[in-house]
Image (spheres, helix red, strand yellow):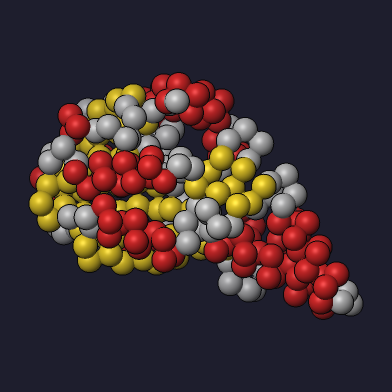
Length: 258
């Protein structure tokens, strides 16, 4: 299973920013930076952090500038290869090809764990394993800072598309059918399970209530969730530019403690 999943992300590595709307893209106000500066404390230089699913390593240089030790793990060797190029010369960064469902070698070692849109496997058993491992790699009192893709964003986009159709003269029913067609263009959405079927993989997205439940079930406490909003301009879909001025699409940012 891991080899099949890794191959998908290996193919994405070279064109990562073309395929993925990143929480680190220009213009995105990501709460993770505020929480690093204001909630973790002033002594991060004495702390260790692990980036679970570090991808091509776009967050690693920031972490390296704040923490004494940074460990980045990803199950895609190609992602780790690109991450290595990004952190070349940073002596406090270690990279490993690892499956986030089994991080036994790292248990109890970190003050902070970060995970940015990397808990994406579609099966709940895998989601729960990853969240459980994220909990276990932390020391007592350690902090999780994470971003998860929001399922609500797809429904919100459909709402905006329906309203747009009605404003242009369509009946409510016709506008809704157009919104459904737009929503499923190139995708298959399983709204009950929170699964999006992309051309080459299935991806887990999270409703707010489920996300809080899964984190609680993994053992986390003091769970706080905020939105990471994406400027309309970061999307290639010109249709979305018509919604400029309305609330933006979002992912979920999470702060939680062990």
